Length: 81
Image 1 (cartoon, one colour):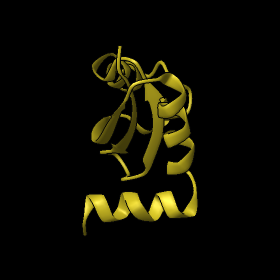
Image 2 (cartoon, rainbow, N blue to C red):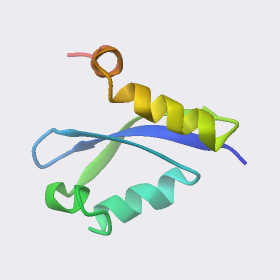
Image 3 (cartoon, helix red, strand yellow):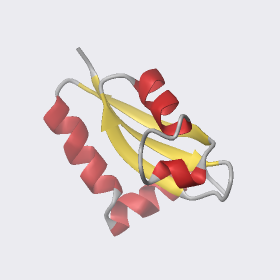
Image 4 (cartoon, rainbow, N blue to C red):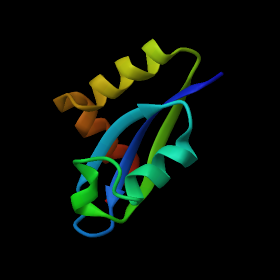
């Protein structure tokens, strides 16, 4: 079963949220339903980037990287102006 690291953008204020999951569709629904404490304050969300990995460990490692300065810069490059 694949695992994913992902980036969401709040349609309310443009902030980005980084995470990892086994099910992208279900996870986005959880965020938009207000079931995740941090993201509930910034609903609605859109999925703007995701990557697939073979293991949960790889997905979590990539999520952690997203949260670094280099990772944040990379995300900005991917999303464009």
